[in-house]
Amino acid sequence: MSEVVEQLRHVCTLGGYESVLAIEKAVPIIHAGPGCAAKIWSTLGLQNGCQGTGYMGGHSIPCTDVGEKEVVFGGGNRLRKVISNSFKVMDAELYVVLTGCTSDIVGDNVPEIVKEFKNGEKSIIYAETGGFKGSNFIGHELIMDAIIDQYLEPSDEIEEKLINIWATVPYQDTFWAGNYETIKDLLSQIGVKANIIFGPGNGLKALNDVPKAQYNLLISPWVGLKNVIHLKEKFGTPYLHYETLPIGPTETGKFLRTIGKILHIDDNVVEEVIKKQEDRYFYYIERAADVLLETRLLPKHFITIADSAYTLGISKFLTNDLGLLGDKQFITDDVPKEYHKQIKEYFNENPSSNIGDIQFTSDSGNIKNYLRNTKFRTKPLILGSGWDRVISREVKGYQLSISAPVSDRMVLSRSYLGYEGALRLTEDIYSAVLQDFQ
Image (cartoon, rainbow, N blue to C red; front, side):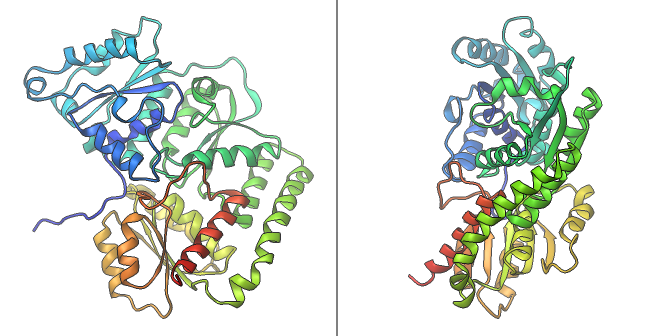
């Protein structure tokens, strides 16, 4: 008997091309069938926080649009033409050729074709990203590895306190741009220079500086771990794997102290920054304490339906800082089984936290069945995606979209990370509760 997976929250491996678009003056060249790139753009761009196209994204992305002829006779010549014409009309500093299912199955010799164009002034690399290889989280890792192997060169110098930041996957994470800016701001306050290749004002200059960094910092439960290991193998750069998104005072303070210790930053400097930020955070929380607590409008129990990064980060904030109780946490990013055990341990680092059960699933049907068949004593808070709005109304819960696809909000530079981000998240949660009284 066949089964249908309902309402997926990510796309195929080829969707990793969004990570290329997040690098200023970098352009993907898609070697795939017609419609692949457009559907991915619609899912991760237009329908996910109205993020738009990025630099030369959307319908401007060069694509070979391979059809039956290329399947029979090969699409090598068509790819050559598209690359050549892209060089003429696309103002880019890095071109990344990405393959889809059709070209990977047919077996076009993409490495050799790309090699033909490497002797010119343009920088061009490739990655085999046939959609059958997995999700766009895997595609992101494949593209980053291609950049490491084919573009980056060793550096003769290491810049002290320069750290490469690798965190959430661009465009898949609706809040990615604001997240990277928040991380950069937090680290700058303790004297750390964050090198970020994604987002505004970064691009190829930041990418060229990657081998110069003193450390690679990965803020993610699993996505990107293979990349920072690869960077260590190629350039000898040590890495720090910080698995939890720093949301709220508890986790952000821990995050800053961890970075300060590794880089041998004066403890007084770090603690002064933390105190200043916590004083401001608690000023606003205490000012609203009678509304948040005495009115008893905030729900006691919460459910997250998101990728592992957000499920972990938000669950820790809600339990450790807001004092809510976790009911069930659904992890939807198709996490490889090799990481399941370790991710569950990340959730249970604090035995006193009531985070609830953890379930790995990419099927919204399973999630709907759980919500329909569970008797909640009070209205639950459901932190998920735009997919979950209907079922949340059905079970009379409070719903807030925090993971892809975020189809009911526009997101520009918003972030839930750090101290300021935690205040924004608290505002958004309470606003969702108040909507129920309109």
